Structures are given as structure tokens and as C-alpha cells.
Image 1 (tube, one colour):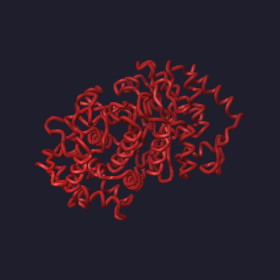
Image 2 (cartoon, rainbow, N blue to C red):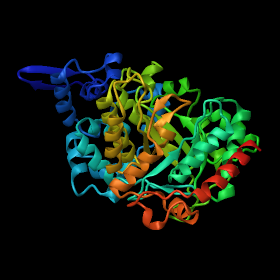
Image 3 (cartoon, rainbow, N blue to C red):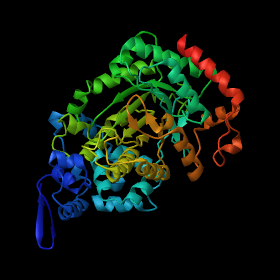
Image 4 (cartoon, helix red, strand yellow):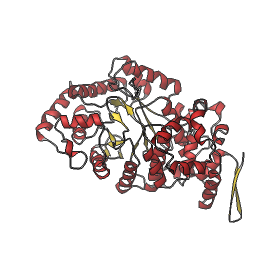
Length: 475
């Protein structure tokens, strides 16, 4: 059905919901590259005004990616919970945004609503929000997951310890691992991007991480961020796999470009569950089933020519429907990693990071963010400090912890171990409770050092700790 709005006697017409969503999206280089962006600010405002009048029910009858062509669309519509949707089913997109800002939208009502929302609904609402709206609404959402640590509790912000090395040198990885642990990083996951993506090396890294976690009783989980098929082979070889990693996208064609489909993700999840490596139960006393770790990023569908004429933020939100289906422990948008072709500068990266977190949380996904940029983007560490602070205020589940904020293997700029400590101190946030107790037990910091005082590093601990990790890594 066509959509329209008039500004200054100029009639703007948008033939499809797909077109309307794209034209209403705040400016970003990827949409301009794809040829779907608004021609100017006035057309963008007209699209946003028209979008505000669209009933939420319309998203259930008009698919932006054809149902018959795309298994992600089929997943979204076939799994939609009409009963959960009922409380807001009478609202337009604009009314829905206003409701989200009201006191009626609280942690419980939003959790109950999540199964009734589609990615396109929340993407539409995000396009009508200011940055402070994105922060305030996302802050109300709590998505809690568990493995050996509990992620997503109120007043907590976890970190992924990311000890990458350009040659997968075990002692180099061990040095970064020690650095991160002594600075309170690693409660979300200790996750390595392998430089050499072959199965024997993946197995070696998994054993190294598993040995360190077991030897020191660290209440965290490990992950080697390799392709899901490699992880399946590693499980077959008896490797200690905690979390299965995979990059995912918001269309079937995007996922095909990654070499995967929904059936393969289900196979991998079943394999990880069969290992029974998680120690924590969910709030109902049952195994949590949170054994997946997904990464996403605006622009991946366009780079694969798999966007179906949609804007990149709407397609990104659809990736969270894929994630939600597999009950992950962790999901994060690697927001500035794909490059300036998709998010040109710090302003666009900041907006995208807050949109992604907002959409993921509303859909019931345990969202984190890799607050990052590539060296050829028009962005710098000041932009990342601003986004990091906003995400901390918005209740982001976890961020990255990279030595010195400079990933020497992936060659991009992210957040450091120190950045997480700064956020915890400024915003009164704490580490995951199990990990916090471990830090105190190991003498890395005292209880009253969290979060209000600098963390106390102990020379007495550091030397033997480093030697032990290096021995485990080279055994």
C-alpha cells in the first residue's frame, strides 16, 4: 500500500513499507551507497511523519523481504506471538514510541511484550527517536542470561576479554589474558578471534582457555570466534566448547554468504547443549540453554548484495530475530567495524550503536556492543568515549576489553580494559556478581574497590599468575 505525507505543499509518496522505512532512516553512508536513502532532510522528515502514522499491525501483513523468498522472514512471522503483541496492537508507530517513553513501559511489561514485536516494528520506532529516547527506553529493558556468570543484571556491565594475537602466539595471548583479568575484564566471555582459522588451531586455543578457566576457577566462559562448522568439528574432536560463535545477518541471502542457515545454527546449538558445560541455572531452576554467541553489524547485507532494497538498520534489526530464536548468552553489534562505506563518521557510528542496542533489547536479545571504528573512518577515540558513555547509561549488557583499545590482529580500534573500569566508576556499574566475587577471592581487588575506587593490582599475584598461564598455553 502507498504511504504519503505533505510538507510545505509538497506531496511525498512512498510506494512500499520497505521504501518508507529506508527514507525515514537517519542519514548514513551505507543507505546512500545502496540508493535507498532520502534525497534530502525534508524528504526524510516527510517519511518519518508518514511512518509515525503506520499501524503496528501493518508490519504483520506487509513483509519488507518476501516471505516466500526468505527463511528469516518466515521465522519472524511464523514465530510471532499474537497474545504478547495484544497490549500494543492498536497503536501506530508514533503512538508506540510514546508508549515506550511512558511509565507504563517498565522492565516487566517490556519483557512480556518482546515476543510480540517484530524487528521491523522496533526499527521503525527507533527511526522516530532522539538519542536520549534510545537510551531511556533501552535502559528499561533487562535481558538476563547465564552460563558460569550472570549477564545483564541491573547495575552491572560485563566485558568480553579479547586477547587476540596476530600469530596466535600462546604467550602473547597469555599476556593479554593476564592484563585483562587483573583489570577486572572477562566476565562476559574470554573470546579469541583466531589468526589461523583451521580446526587444529581452534582446538588448541579452546584447550588453552579451558585449562586457564578450570585451573583458576574463573566464573566465565570461553569462545574461539571461528565459523560454526569449525566449532562443530572441534566438538567432534572433544574440545571444551563453552559457546558457539557465529556472525549472522538479517536475510537468508546474507547468512548464505556467511556459509550458514538456520538449520546449521540449530545443529550447532544442539551440539553445544549436549556438552553440559554451563553451571548456572535460569530463574526457573532449569538449564539456561544460553550457549550461543552472535555478532552482527549494519552493512553486512549490503556488502553481500543481500539487502533486498532495505535500509541497513532495518536489516540489522532482523538479525536480532535470528539471534533471539537460538537463546544466546551474548549478542553484540560490531558497530563501526565494517567501515566508512556503511557508517561514515563518529556521528553515524554513535547513532547506529544506540539504535542497535535499542532494537535488540526490545526484541529480548542480550545486547552488547563493540564500540569501535576502523582507522580509515572519520572517527576517533572521543567519538567512542561518547558512545560508550551513552551505552553505559542505556544498560548495555557488555562491551569489549582489548589491550590498549588497539586490536593488533584485527587492526581496528575498540575499547580497553581501562575503559570498562572508567564506566563502572562513573556510572556506578559493577562486574557480573560471580566474577566480582572471584576478583575479591583472588586478591585482585577488595569489595570496597568496586566500583568507587581504582582497582588494586598485586605484584605478588601477577608474576606467578603469568607464569602459570604461559605454561598452560605452551603445554
